[in-house]
Length: 142
Image (cartoon, rainbow, N blue to C red):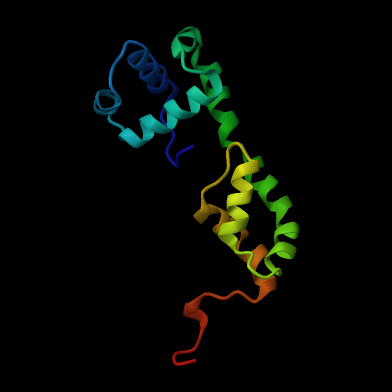
């Protein structure tokens, strides 16, 4: 989810406020978190539960934690790393770019990582065998 997760009590309060019709801005201000964080959590909850979040009001903090923890699992990166050998072969083809591979990855993965994370996770493994170097490693004037 985010680098700094909200506490489950805050998440329960967020759900309570949203079910009662409060705006995302109001929720963010009252909980002392950003609107982006509210959007992220609500988006994830809607994708898992559907549009009616009222059933979550009866869940305890442990159940909410298990629901949110599921999205954070490290298997996302592990699954991505399993695709790297295929991506190495694909990148050797003419016209195939990292962006193209990431877009293809997003179409097949429900909780895909962002493009920058895709490049960062794949950087050392995926792109080193192709001779891809950063510009800062080149000598000036070369």
